[in-house]
Image (cartoon, rainbow, N blue to C red; front, side):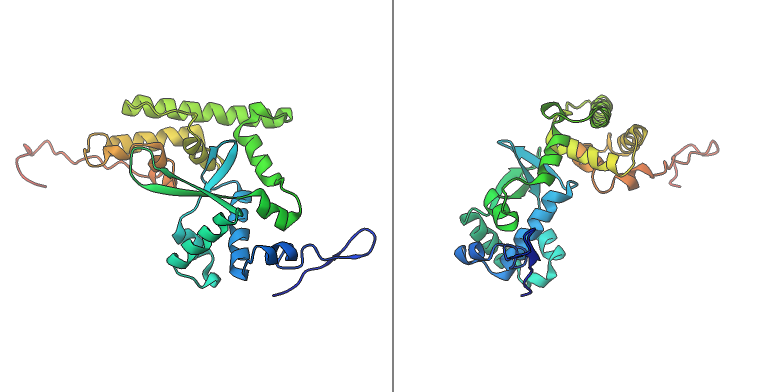
Length: 255
């Protein structure tokens, strides 16, 4: 393990971040291993990224992470899924990581959402306040935070786009999705940050309602989590394939 040191303003060696960025005394107190620290750092990095799907619970933000994603992003943990679950349970028991489970809207598919706690941030920074999360919470609920006029204009524009997208989807599919649902807002904001415009969302809705609306097996996927997820761009670029119908055939033969 490499130790990290830095000089304080007085020129004295400060050993606070001397165990992979964590306070050594607290690491020993909680009996944490190197792989525990890497897992904590990873969950924190997910929170700080501000592009992952999240939900809000009791004023705190939790971020969706699948075991497959954690293992795929951290191959040097050298653990299987069972061991990973044990590691997470241990960190939860110690109050270092928090977790909640929610069922996906309209399904029995369970999603696990995580956050690092104030205890973890004290170990990492000596301060329970996380500036990156504070920034994200400002973006999520700008009306509760004093921000400059430019930020207000951007957030208002995004809110208007989200509202128009959901209204368009509800009208096209005769649904009643809400534009205030955190998960829906997260997906649409993620696509906006990638540079997509209101017209792009409408085109995706048009493309998929044309192919799925009357398909009893596929119409259930005309929902925000499917339309505005990772396949958004491919849906946007789908080319309509009109059925060939020749005036020289009466339709009785297969073509």
